[in-house]
Amino acid sequence: MEKRRRVTEEDLLVTEALIAESYGRLKRSVARAPYRALRSAGGAVLEHPLAAAATATVGGILAYQVLRMVMPRGAGRGRSPSAEAKGAGSHDPAREVLSMVLPVVAPYIVGYIREALGGTPESRR
Image (cartoon, rainbow, N blue to C red):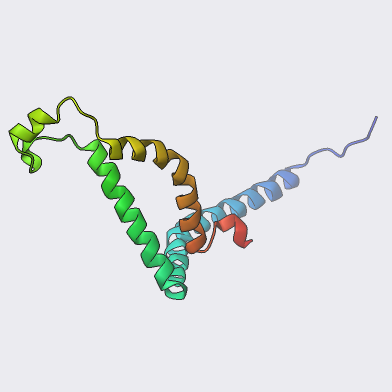
């Protein structure tokens, strides 16, 4: 059986000091994270302005399409009641295709945006 050294009060105090120092570093890192993220995003936009514009445009189009799918259609959105009555039984093929394609394409879009903004924090270490 292996002989072990007894834990002393000094060992506990040193351990407590190390934990407090580590916790302090963690708090500083968390406090600085938004600034670092904005700084890296700003740098990526300055380095690749066309890719950033394209990413923002595609993201805006996708957000608009998602909002169009979520928002209810009604006479208050520019549709006449007669057009609403005509289309009540029909389905929207564009919405159906988008609802099938969006879950498949979303990870690729997120990956492209992440790459355009400089990658993940883990990849920079």
